[in-house]
Length: 246
Image (cartoon, rainbow, N blue to C red; front, side, top):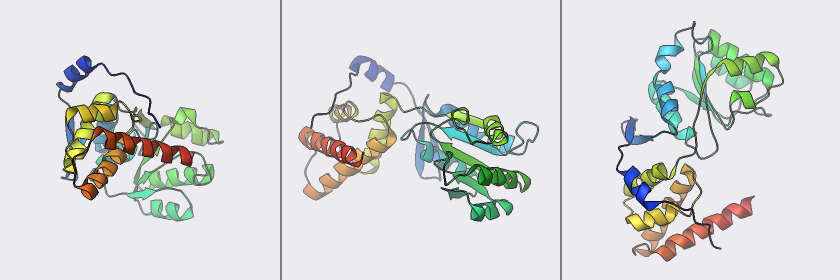
């Protein structure tokens, strides 16, 4: 299977790579890469302590980070975890509401109207978070203005929360992540191989990490240097597997 190649202006690409990117240390071990696509969300979470306790600005201590799958929402939530002890939720039921009654802090992942997040339960949950001095970071694919909770009051509440969009990474950020993650794995890739990968994969964090994980596995198994043929075979195999899952 042949992957469609993206057109990248190598001259512009090389020039932009010379520009400094900011890094944020997370949990004293990981460097989160800050770029135009996520810097606003990072700043919002970094100022969490300021607005959390200021009821005049935000009566519900919660924010929404939203963006497409693979944009890095889960990774950026690590910044929040570094600031407060929190519990990660994938649904809201009576059990989670009891946790909110104890004043806990939360990360709520894949937050969209569904059987896992009924309007009544979400409303109750928000009330308990507010009244018990907890806080919550919602991670969602859609903004509050593009979701319908079937309750006017809940729609109004969600749309009044502080929120920020994370966009999919551009080629420069993908390249930086590719280099960093391959170095973490002690996987040797030259510049041409890195550009070759970026030109042929989907533009999201998950795909970059998956490619490197697969290449690292092959490298460890074969004990040989990676070739363009090996890289292309891995990308093709990932594409086939993804298509079979659809």
